[in-house]
Image (cartoon, rainbow, N blue to C red):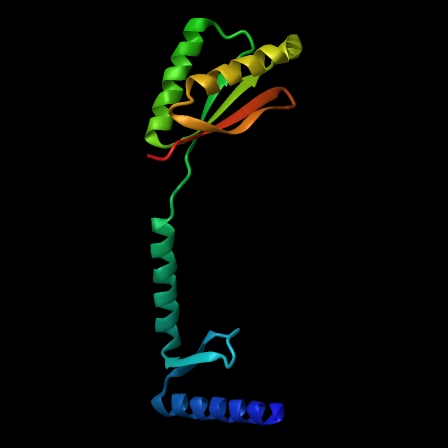
Length: 152
């Protein structure tokens, strides 16, 4: 029974190839995983062109994720904090993701609790505009936190 199906499939493929040769076109396999495989008789160059055109259209419609960074020090002053918070608000309103980090220079790594408090305070201040994607995490000399904008 299975052998009969294979023979029928081969016969149809040979028939399709002969028809494609007769029309001076190509036999293009559209869906190889389907049972039986789906083929079309068309001009192969035109097929490739249309496929690239479709991919390009899909790529242009895809959303591009923009990540903006804001850098703090462990002992950032109140005025500097407010200034950078305003920038963060602007970035989130524009729809960009925010990467806020505290950079520890030299021996300032001993103030990592202050850096974490600073980032958590920023997350709390920006709570109405965005949600925390990743809590403050220390990586080397940087403590990083990601905030993504809330959907409207």
